[in-house]
Image (cartoon, rainbow, N blue to C red; front, side):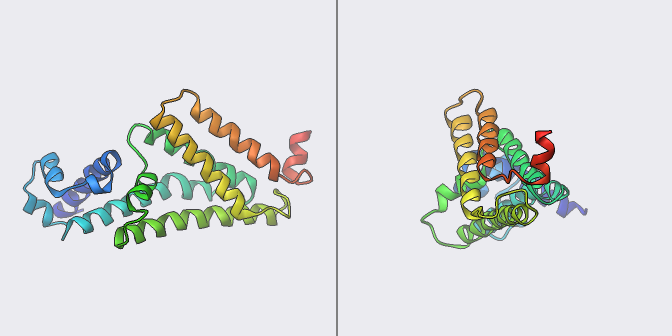
Length: 206
């Protein structure tokens, strides 16, 4: 990477930390310049506007989410094993974000009624993740791990509910054991959808 690219990457790293802590709306060129020991014009040289900076921060967050959660999970066999990996890695990421904050969740609060490019980008990213979860659930049904009458949309909705509850209890209320409760809740949830005749279930019984 050239010097300009390295500087831009360093700015984005700091910007992501600030946005995770203060929200995307709390991210300002002035604050970022102070953190980087740069002038405002120096930061502006890498990003045309504050909105461009916010969008780039979103893209960086999404990229890291994919690298930590999605791509390792799709290496698992299709079916319930892949779905379990997705949820476990998702929970692991939330456990790290307890100290910083989840931009998907904070962004949903900030931009739920604020139209514009940032809201559209955020919705597209969350929609892509939900779409990946839906495909995973459908594959688990197709391979017989989950019951044939499973409603994929409902299962994904309930998985999201567990993550939101985890984030609330672990980050806001600081309740000990929240991570374990999320895992217990997910396994109980899967139990209501699991196909007892699937090869994985039969092996587990023996």
